[in-house]
Image: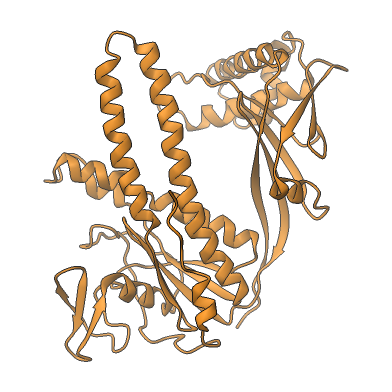
Length: 404
């Protein structure tokens, strides 16, 4: 097996803090600087952000802020300008600040940022032992800082050497669960994704009630929708974090690589006009597979775990033992006529993902499963038996507790 590469991986750490009054004008000025830089970009059409800095520097200098705010505003503006749609004039509406790693100083939980030349603002961050372990780690390199009215987000990076895996974990992500199968024999199904479906349905009803009760005052309606939207996102992210952390911790402890399906183009299956009801389209378009894959990806890279995307075609239609086509039964069950074995659909898929020999994504060709959309091949039985067997104590580590 060829040696695995060294990765440059990045992780963002979020802190809460009490926003001082002097930040209000700074937020407003930075937003205006970004919008002015966008106007310059639309008029002049720069090819890169450095050209935009050259074009907009004198105009943005009139705000009287530190020079690094000019550089950051042009960086934000060029990113928005490059991603804009045709015949659209984008604007920055949210209040935030962004600075590069040379603009601020962080002394444990005390953050110093510049306002004007030779003038500084000090922010006291609130962090747990986890936050301080990241801050005080000399092996991590600080990146840019983003400041909003509620949070401070600091990026950290490091070089990671991927280890040679002794086996693999196949992860099958569904609407209501994430199922894993490992080459050491451990299998487990995480049901927290099902809780997310219930959370989204509950908050959908909450939004309806807010819309009905605040018809006469849109300002209160927006405020309530924002509040409950944050609650929904936080509760959703908490459950996804719990699942992905347990999977990556198990992979790291047992030196296993992670393989997941490349779920691409699924949203196209649930568009208006596809002969589907609005309830089904709404439910499937709120499926959180993208965030689950993102968290698995960055957590695996941060820990040096080899991570691959595989092709989903056939993962829920072929037997992982003999490779023959299985017949569907009721209750998400499948039956292999050759082996005379009855499989759980999700366990069968996770086993096929684990055994995939070609761990790379291929162009999308559609799927008949309603939850997958790529094509490719698997080799049932490959990698089977590699690595040591999982003990009962190991599998207990993956048993989840219900989060209230």
